[in-house]
Length: 213
Length: 329
Image (tube, rainbow over all chains, first blue to last red; front, side, top):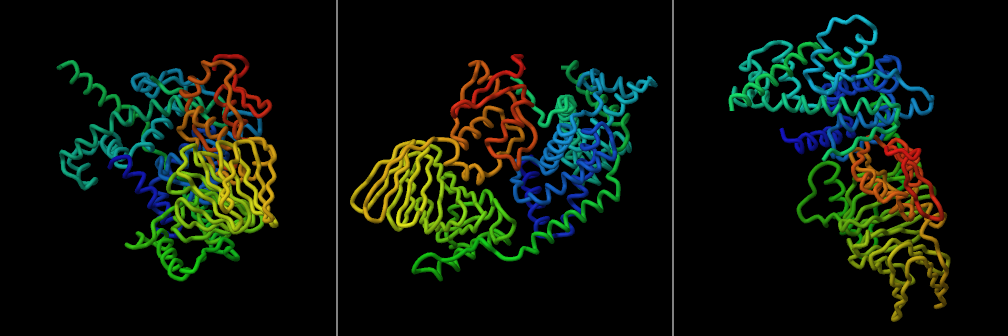
């Protein structure tokens, strides 16, 4: 599904949420809330209590301002933007920051794989592994839903392409095509998140990046 | 060619191994999902429990009944389905509502020709006309949208920003017509008079057979007895405070700091200056993420600029941008 269609779909979902459609809440839950939760966890250095607070505060604001959502980004990105702001405000108010983790393995997946599969047992190493794991999950969250699912079915459940095609309700060729587009999309999403989260850990209320090129 | 194929295969394999190594994504805890559902329901109920509509839709002229029916058709079309064929064209959308909750208008509502918007005490509304012009209604105002080019002010005050690309937008009052010439200005109804306060560009006041020019930095007050008064007005500060408070939030996510600064200066009337000319180019390359909802254009720099490695000060209506701590960031 092209990006614009995702945005239109999300706008339609928001309209249904505003109309009080219970099925729309289920769709929101399925489509966005898990991703938002994982995003909140990452932003607060896996402080679960604080992540809960940020998650709930984000949704309270989001449900109050649903009409402001214009579909310029995906609904999940919009929610994560609010969450990022909440977390930034939290740390700014309390003048403290989450523990900084040096993610200097780089944003190349090969280096990340090294970190993920290392058996180092020191606390810093374990923390870095956890951060990397969460970033991988967040990158999957950022992908179009069926890209993320197709990758998980293939690489976590080990399903053959034919079965993935069945689950996606598409033909074999289409499933292969989805997988071949999903992999570079995953790599790009991971690299963007890696840079973004590093910025976020500097305790800023807003995260900025520099446009490349 | 073979090397490329091998690289791609290796790339696919790495992605697969990374995903495999991290295991399944942890699910959202059930209690949080239920808490989210409760929050959603509570917000819905709070909206539904609104005591009274305070922004009313009404006809404005002789053909009131017909226009109202057509207007309501378009309004319902927006809320519940596509607009009916033959409905008056949409000439404005609601960009922001400010003040106590309630009323029948919602952000994003489409307004057709013939619609009227009213604000009560403490309420302000931001509209965007089909031509792109920004319109703000101050408290206790009634504005009728005759067309995308003609607005009728019945009471209160309205602010227009045609973004420099004027199509000759007119604001009618019972005393005369104010016509913009690529500008930002306010029209206010007073007791037995009306005033036009010009922030940028020029406005022409049509007073019967006479046309009077009001350039930027002036307020012209025209009384019903035919007398005119001119006074100087600053492009920023107190005369425009209410406009800032009726400004729709800037959607910061993914926008450059330069775009953000353009919004700030447009809304505040401040001039923009960079302590170092190179900084202007840099601000085009710094992309901001997050939300500044709830902050006015005057407040937002305090949040956005430090997080972008920038410092600022305002001096005599000029916003001066510098590097934070004199560093290159």
